[in-house]
Image (cartoon, rainbow, N blue to C red; front, top):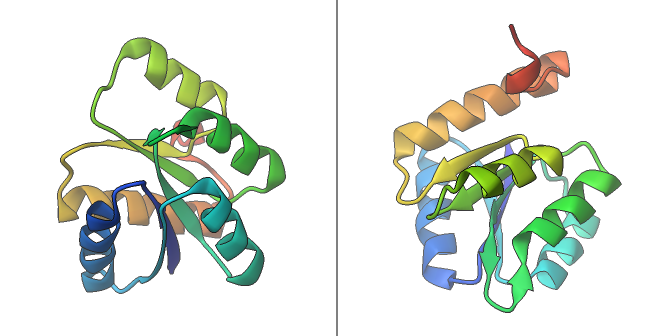
Length: 128
């Protein structure tokens, strides 16, 4: 799978890329929504891992933009899982979310759900 990692912290992009690579993924990294949009236009991307806090940018706004444009699964990274934020990410079409710090096993579970989505078209929330 080709995964796009979007986080304003280059180190987190690199660490996540290494972890996803060990799980057999090809990764692309972006530190801004503009860079991510450019990669989405030029690469075949199967899923996006997006940080809610993109420095001066609003990750929720970018999530809305991504989900309005395509059916690519978007997994949100967040360090502060407030109920109101979690509700907003579901409302804006997030496929799932990961709490920071996350583990390789957390990534593996998300990848399994993404693969299932690409096979069946069902999101984790639509699977009984």
